[in-house]
Image (cartoon, rainbow, N blue to C red; front, side, top):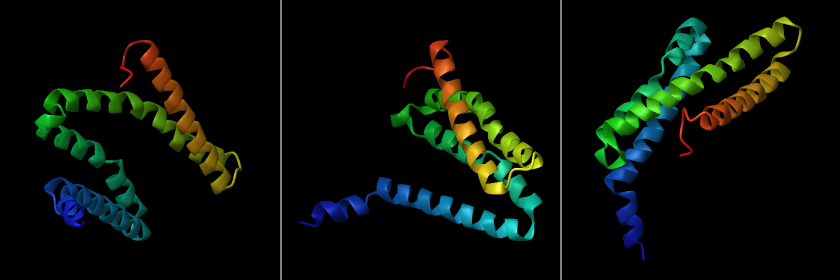
Length: 133
C-alpha cells in the first residue's frame, strides 16, 4: 500500500522539488532577517533576478523540458513582463507620497500590478509577441 508512496517521496525528482522549495523558503527568511538590519542590502539582494537566473539555468540543463530554446523563450517572456511589474513600486511609493497609508497603497499597487501584467500579456499575445502557451 505504501510502496508507491515511498517510491514517490524518495524519487530524485521529488527530492529535488522539495530541495528547491526549502532553498527558496530559506532565501526569503534570510532576506527578511537581513532587512531588519539593512534595508539597502536586502533590497539589493531582492533586486537581483536570482529566481529567474536559476529557473533559466534549470530549464536549460533539462533537455526533457526543452533545453536552451525553452530557457531562451522563458527569459524573453520574463523580460517583457518585467516592465508592468514596475507599476507596483511606482504605485506604492507614489500613493504614499500623495498621503495614502501603507496598506491601502500596497493593495492598490498589487492590484495595479496584477491588472497591468494581465493587460500587457493580452496585448503581447494579440500582437504575436508571445504565444498562448
